[in-house]
Amino acid sequence: MEYALAGITRESIIHLLENEYSEKIIEKPVCFDNLVELYKNKKIRSMFSTGTAVGFQPIASITHEGKRMSFSINTGLQKKLRKRLLGIQSDQSKDDYGWMVPIHELYG
Image (cartoon, rainbow, N blue to C red):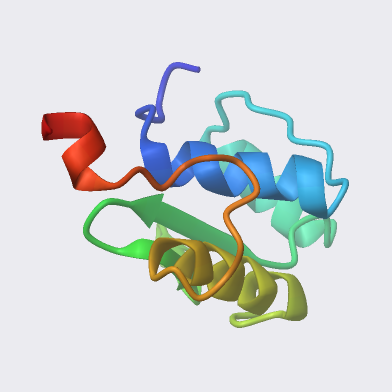
């Protein structure tokens, strides 16, 4: 992938989508013209970003060359993903993947 940085939050969301929600993930560069075309053809319903600072953040809209594309935020799947990820991170949900490691095991 040319335009997205690899990151643990991103990888975790992709893993959850594939393994718990049976979503097929396709990663490829998308230019704004392609994004606009997908939006016009109703091929994109929602978008989100991930990162260390933001965790999991729905994207409400993108404006390009004065044209605004609005997306559904907090969709059912977005809510489930956010809840699941935060649950694992805060030890409120079972960590089926071994992602959480006690600090003493790392730096013991």
